[in-house]
Amino acid sequence: MTHSPGDNPRPGRPSLLLAVIGLWLMVFGTPLEAAERPLPDTIQPGVTYLQQVVDNAGATTIDHRKLAPLVDFIMQDKAAGEPYFSTSDRLLDPLVYHEFELQQSLATILQYAFHPDIPSHVLALSSIRFSYWKEVDGRPQPFPDAIAKRLTDLDAPLVIHGIEHEEIAPDLFSGAYYSYDLSRTLIMCRIGGRMVWISLARQRDLSDVGRKGFVLGPDDDWNYIYSGEKGINKMGLGWVESYLYDAFSAIVYIQVDDATPRVRCGLFKWLRAGWNDMNFVRRSHIRRGLERYAETYRQILEAPQLPPPSRIAAAAEEIRSMSRSQLQAHGRRHLQSLENRFGSDRQFPDKWYAQAIENGPYLEQLTRPQLEAMVFLDYMKEVLGRGTAQASELAMGQDDPRGGTP
Image (tube, rainbow, N blue to C red):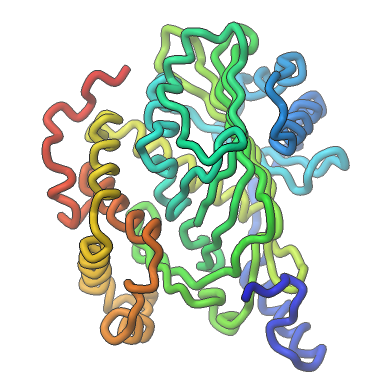
């Protein structure tokens, strides 16, 4: 049974509560940050408007006038890596902004990120364990096909509302991972003559309790273990039951011009998470998560080995057709490979591995989406030249790695 975030996970004296809070603040306190700049007041109505749109699943039209200042701000020249935030009373606090560019066309990005047959976390492998659409426009139906083709016909904006389930990769600060449902809104339109795609997300309810995860080796190698055990992967806090309370994000993709395969992305993110009804999220945590997401997104999309969407879709379909026993066999090889590579490392959970993998029912307890995500991750690592031959059979047949993708 899921506990309320206000339930004290262990009864005891107030001194225990104070000690745990002090330890948490020591572990997750705000590090020194580069000088931050406040977001301009001109964009606050646009951000507020996007919050209202994602909270209103009946919205089918978009007011371009409210979004124009937002697009103008994203397209302005800024110093590389310049951090922005907002603590305005009119916005969620703290709202963090991060910006990056992709050397691809918007059509190409949509063919990968919003393909009906490709897992929707395909470009976010360091941030998301798995995700899938539960509902689109009020019905349990698959994601619409050929979204990218709509870029040639934007007389009327395209607005899609849905519900997406998501489970994140281990957090870089706590090692915990969480699962939850999101209200998701996707918008395609032209603003100021530019093609714009907006992806909005708002957490619907309290997340599942945080569970212990492990990042093995450099984070950009995408080697993770998901223990299934409640708690946080920090000494002295292993028993803490943490939650994601609420979250909002807006990702705005802007095609620089119709003739150039270059897209500028502006990310706005707000998050509350912690323990015992207390929020321990700091701006630095949000910013590091956005940087992690953006770097992986760019690494995958700009990789010369990236197969065309049709190849990835075919591999995803093959994974979906695998029996549970086949998925579990692959999962066992995957985890054994991690143990062979990282078993002597300090961060490797050797006691957990002995109990859960060598002598326990861990693989039998994983859901099918979790098992499929393990195989899909290995497939993507293999085709991008990061793998250990776990998914070589799925990766075969990559003759022209870019195909006819624009």
